[in-house]
Image (cartoon, rainbow, N blue to C red):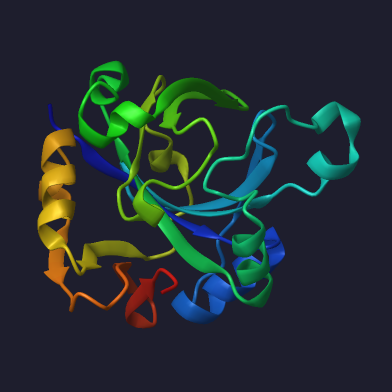
Length: 222
């Protein structure tokens, strides 16, 4: 089964902080997207191609104060993690990537995705199934992508084009064979490059983008 890269995820303490940060890094202003009522988050979005997009995500402050918007499950992307919250207050950061599956139930029966459960998410007129661990944590610290399946046509085609595109995704890791095996089992190995690190070096994700400022590389925190 062929998976495709669906979107790149940057997290911020606030959406305004994230938009300002990406404007500094990429030279573009990412438009506001919408809210995820069931996840207590909101986002800003821009197109990278007709079936690929860039997301800035943050906790929706209204979900913390408005009883109608409070959630009864952990937020996705590890956003409830106190350490990550402290790091994001200092600076937004690349978190992870997400892949698109034509059959999410088949995907979560394979390899590392067996630790995830699929749930229906909606935002406005969009709906999709999204698989993640029950506690909302990133998979392998964000190096292994989350997987989703859209129920509508791909939303990227209707997003603003700010002149940015994805060049490549690179996973740097001290145990590259483990990463290669995990991605091979779920059908995502062809979507990335894997580069070895010394055994005492922490792994990280690097996303290379073509932007109005030239080629920019965003990296996860090490």
